[in-house]
Every structure is written in C-alpha cells, then in structure tokens.
Length: 411
Image (tube, one colour):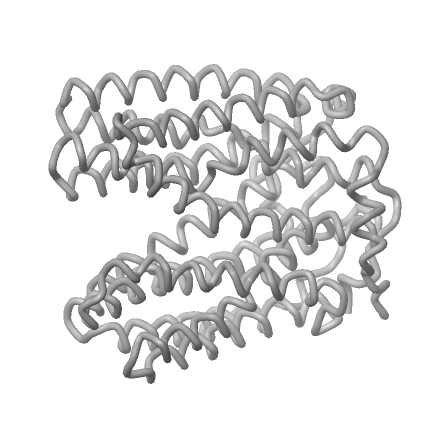
C-alpha cells in the first residue's frame, strides 16, 4: 500500500499541537544529558581514582542499569500513565546521584562505585519513552504522527552531539563532578516538568485488562524490530571502538571524539530529508534494507589510509543512523500490542544498549589484535548478517490484533 508522505508542514503541525509545547520543552531538558551523564561519570571517576579500569566499570554498569530500567519503567508508564512512575524514579535517581557523588569523593571501593553506577542507570527517568508514546495520543493524522516520531529521532541525535561536548567542557571545571551533577539536575528537572504537564497528567492509568507476561514482546513483529535494533546497536558499538583506535594508531588520539561526532552530524542533516521521502516504502523491507546499507557503508571505513579519508566514510555512514532510529519508532507503533507503547520504546533502548555492548567488546579485541580495519569489516559483516535475519522475519512486521492498521507499515 502507498505511504502518506511527510512534509515540513507536518513537522510544524506536530510541534504546534495544542498543549504540546510544555511536554516538548521539558522532554528536551530531560533527554539533553542522556549522552552526557555516563561520560561525565566516567571522567569524574577517573579523575578521582586515577583508574580508567574503575571508571570503565562504573560507566558499563550504568549502561546495564539503563537497559534493565528502560523496560521496567516503560511497563509502569503504560500501566499507570507517566506522571507517577516518572516522579518516583526521579526521586530515586536523585538519591542514587547523591550517593554516587559521595562515594566517589570518599574514594569508596570499586564494587560500591559499580553498584551505585548501576543504580543511576536503573533509575534514570525514561522521559524519552513517555514522550514518544505521547504523540499517538495528541496527533490525529498519520503524516503528522510520523513527523513527530522523526522529530524525536532527530532531536535525540542532536543530544548525542551536544552531550559529549558538554561533558568534556564541564570536566575541566574546578570540581570534576560538575558535569555529572549538572546533567542529573537537568534530567530530573525535565522529567518532573514533563510528568506534571497537563496533557501528560491527563494520560492516566490504563484500564485493567489481561496482559501477557511478555508484554510488548508478545508480538512477533515487535521481536523482529528488536532484532533490527540489536543489529543497529552492534554496528554502532564496533564503530565507537574502531574510530578512536584508528585515531590513536595515526598518532592523533584526541581526534577520536571529533571523528565520531561526524556520524551524528550527517545523521541529523540527512534525517529530515529522509523523513520527507522514506525508502523503501514498505516498513517490512525498510528495516532490513537500511541495516544492510548501514553495514555496507561502514565497511568503506576499512580502506582509508588517512584520517581525512576515514572522516569522509564516517560522514557517509552516519547518514543512515537517524533514518533507522525513526524507522524503529514508527514500526513499533504498529507492531507493539495495544497499551504497550512506552514499554516497546524501552525494549528498543534495551536492544540498542545490548547491541552496543556486544559490538564494543568484540571490537576492542579486534582492534587490539588486528587493527581498526578488521573491526570495521566485522561491523559490516555483523550488520548485514543480522539484516538477513530481519529480512527472513519481515512477514511478522504487520499490525497486531486490536490495533488500528497504519497503511505505510504493511506489505
């Protein structure tokens, strides 16, 4: 079936929807530090303990915590509405942030720091999941809804550009914990403002009904989307280790972060253009095709012999990041069971985080033993292989029972 095309006027209509200004602004505050807190914590721990190993463990435990907390919070948001869960986890997150800060300052044992780092991840307020799920309640047309979800993906990429830069600047402040605490305050403030917005408070608890223990994953289509997101995360994980490795090998280790930022820059730049004319038109084909193309473009980064050449290939590969993020968001609106939108977004975050962890761990070994080119080629092979699995499962990407079909998502 044909797709209703998204236009710039659809973006304007989404962002000027009545009563949406406050949730949009507050969700920006809540999500801005999402790529800042973990890095700030890593730099803070390293400054205080002098150990990159300890800092890495604390950062990794935070990622694991986010992966676990995203699904649990999403399920609570679907069941009770966003207000009470977000306010509750914001309070817990504030406590965990204070505890970790005091532990770092007192040079607590590594296991204590790792445990508290995981606590911060588990209690990190998932305002992003609630914000994405909110759009289906406040907009009425498919094109406006798709524009809203594209805005969510594009804005998230923007935060991944700004976050690391802010963390790098604030770690140079007189107190190295400034970035971590400032990010935490910004996240809590945004989450609370979002939770208390009138349109969000009107969400309310869901009616009592039978719910599968699998939640959103009860849908075969949702499981297929999770596999696609996992593959996306795996490729990103490979890149995040291979690029700094290539910069270090070239004798310019400080350029690793700059090169990685090119991925987000081209992603944001291309994201809007892609949303105006998405391809392939069928969602069941778009998921595997974009992932396979992403893997193929990443393979090009194995050939440049200079950092300039690597920069060009990374800029090209980054163009497919936001299109995939937006595709995942739109897909789950159709494949997720009724009443599980926030949990479904949580599974997307969990799958991406798990994929990144897998990619980083394997990439580190390959970079150490065989060099960055081997890691880029492995990233491509992993992405294309997982895309093949998604292709075989493409028939599951269709509207689930009791959900209104969206024409552009079905074969």
